[in-house]
Length: 141
Length: 92
Image (cartoon, rainbow over all chains, first blue to last red; front, side, top):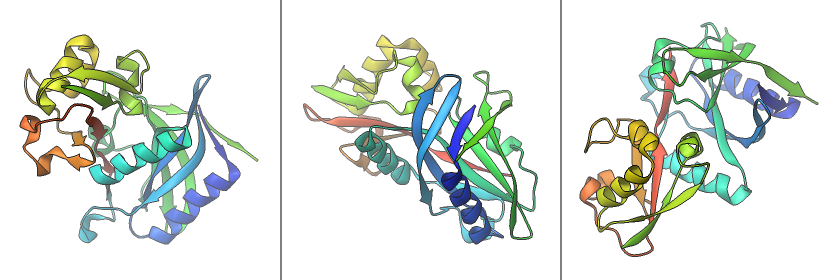
């Protein structure tokens, strides 16, 4: 289960629409709660993939991740996951997502169709790395 | 040399939920090997074999990526901060 506030959900939807036809990406700060994660803040990240690949790929550089880890520690939070958009593609993790994911983290995927944000889902990679499990997305006011 | 190794949230489950652990070593490689010896489950997660880190694992020493230094042979000073940072990517 991944808990989000309505405000954070809206920020992710807006980021997906603004990045279209490319993928947006960012980092979720929060904490572990019973049965999952709660998100308290997010950090939008500039997609570091080359421009010709950004329509179906995102990359968060090691330097951005290092800074985010330090930011999280200062906030008394931890990195609990990431969000990215799938422009004109289902909100389901791909084999590429699985190959580049880590267990523990929550991975939000937002489908953006013709510029409009649509279905938002969240996933966690199994420890075996063989597949993702869907996790409930709980939006709080 | 004694160094602090900062553990990212995704790997804390393999080090008794600690966000940082102490390690001994004169180089980054020695310090990480010291941590891996204490926490074999972490070793499995970050090493692809006995000496090479997995591709998604980046390491910073006092804020500098060791890829810009001498890799695992990068020397560490007493009290240095060694940070394990996963690379993040995706798409379809």
